[in-house]
Length: 416
Image (cartoon, rainbow, N blue to C red; front, side, top):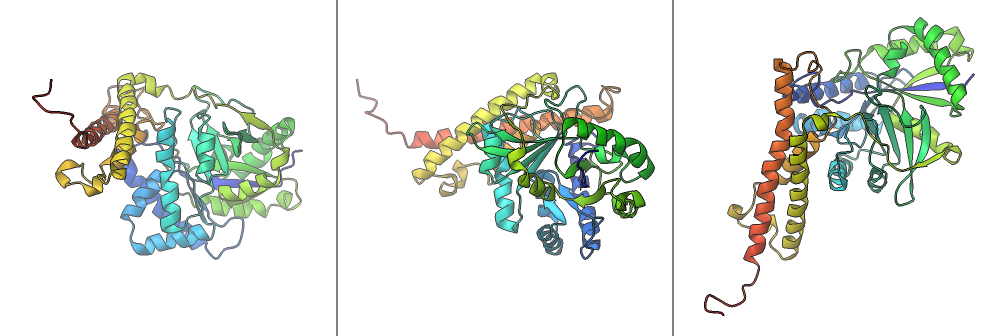
């Protein structure tokens, strides 16, 4: 038998920007999902038990939109439940791909700082789902952002996990520092095992298989991190059925006798606390987690190339604006006719990062390549690249134009 005493069930919505719904619809649904999770967590706020509802915000992009729309009472409730450990906010902007360069990663992690400062959220870990791997510099970027635990829930459809899983380990960053990391199960594993709907299947079939696998791997932690989404699937809401299932499961005689593990509805932070206690016994790995799942970017190579150029222009624009600010001519100091509208820079980086986010195509795109859903979602996806192009061209132009105003001209028309 393995060492597992308790399964930490981490419930969240898997964020696909598109795939199941057109992107504008998806953004509104994600807003509603947070409200539904908030109500379930508030329902159980006084329940001190393993089955008390807990919810993990997988990515910050939907939360940022929710905060823009929610009233003060709802935001206060969210903050109260986050402080109580009933709702967790994790650090990744979206489920990102290795298309993100260092500047994009830094920009995508900037909301972590803002959310901490504005709302007091304790954001100490991050999670990324679907994508097979990440660029090595991400480890340093996460550590710089105050993230000390990072989990990957890899989808092996047209890809694969580079290491055996589940495997907690120390990811040695390029700087030599170490980030606690988890090569974890797919994000749907809880539901796939029967947790939430089929106790006998989990007890008699899936747990014995999983237990044997953990023993084979030499897994030594007393807890196991298992993620799960709503039975709807990707882009699903909070599922209240987990709470009743866990209560009934933990009351089983074979669980009380220790023959089967307890289940606790948890946030990632509770798992990382246990991992920290075993840090020194964990293996160390260094280097990239090579990704070969994100083949979507090659299917739209034209837009991907445009987005690469947009990133270069935005980096140039930022450098120009930094220099102009030192000269007392930053955007806020200039006449409105000589600068882009407020929010243009944020809109540019937002669009750039959403194009490089991991979702490429509708769920019906293979079977219905010319269907309306397929076409609509592709146009929304491609628009992120073209929106970033338009903003970046203007922002770079504004910076260059302002710089030329401050370049001294030597001589005049009569100079030889």
